[in-house]
Image (cartoon, rainbow, N blue to C red; front, side, top):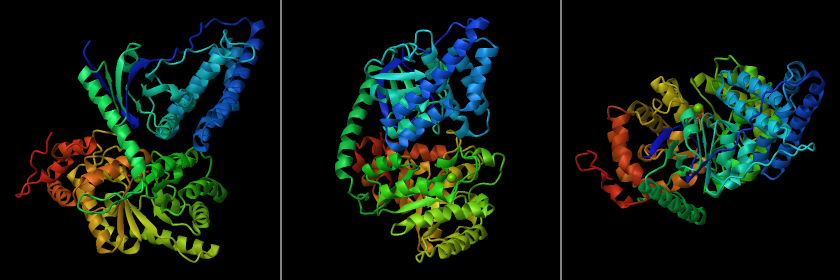
Length: 583
Ligand code: PEP
Ligand code: MG
């Protein structure tokens, strides 16, 4: 059989070459239980749920605090009274055996959540299914009365797990014995993906049902960077991937030794590289890779399941450990960016987003400001305002910040930055730059808004589009005219095609996912400002994203492989045309 490629979405970066492996899914004979046995099955089901919660707590004890918190959400779900009520109906009224009662109740709960028009919440459905499978195993007829699950065979060496979906506890449990994870469904915001990223386990989601046809033991090449899975790759492709993995490993070791070296282009342009984080675990990965601080702290991610606006104390609880781990380095703490795909249940249905939503809920905004200002004493904390659309919103926020700081007796006001994420903000960018202390472009939203596409559509939302590049160039110029720094903190900042263009457009700071910090720092050292400035000027005039990508692809390849990086300098000819840059 020849090689076959399946396409999904990248959920945790890295390459893996290994053998396909699936866990047996607990399958139970759906016999009905006679009325005199129903109490017993009911009690067995509830005991299995309680045991699953206990096991998850024990599993969490061996993890870092941030990872443990994710795994513990499974234990909380197991204690949800609505879930026990559904199990009771299935076991006592409908006469299902214990394990089937659990599977039916968790599946119904998962389907309800999956139907919510909110990607992040919908992703929690996988966590519930995973809990259901765990508890069902414990309640299965082979399990001991003490709640010991029937033994599961461990994965063979170099296994790549293939599954329909996965919960965070499965990732935590299997991480040490797998080399990668390939899922039918799931998404990059699922807890399982967050945990895989923090544990450095390559993961691809959304591969579709075809992935289940992959025979056990088949050789696989999983690419968590581009979201693909190659089944039975040719010997040549597998060798190249193994070589790339070894190169990365060597680079990682060198990066660790090089951590303190600044990211400077070959001709001396220094670019600050910061990390996008939402947790201590992510920050630790970023700092180990040489991040110079936090360029984007996504504070809303800690509160996506919240039942109401977070209080000052809750904000402090999330912020303090992160800022403590950061030490004296700078942190751009973004104020809550709720709305659109990041909507907790209590805001469901709102059509407001980011700063507009905060300004119209002043009390909640002040709570977050108070917490942030309180933890910012003696630290380099800067405030970042999300989805700024109009200078009036920025002015209203600044008034509130000043007022809150005065009330707290904070003498030195923190720097306040405006995120540029909409064409309207770019339209007002000179006024915004004159009023703000720094600007930060969120390329994820800016690209989607400028092109009128869904930001999660990999094929449509391409920041490489010259229309987006022009908006970035306008913003950089406005910031520099106003004498302030401009940061880019969207995914584009760590894209090997975009990176040369951003450096060429004179962006001062890049903030990227923690796992990308080392790559970005290394790529910057391979660039020359002279040639990327010319490349950027040419790209601004191109007709579309395809043309930009075709022109930059050879350079992007060389950045990633590290081969012939000196030749990159010869990429632009005297007449300003891009020469064939490779391969
Ligand atoms: C962005 O839009 O590029 C950004 C960094 O913000 P978020 O992805 O959190 O919306
Ligand atoms: Mg955004």
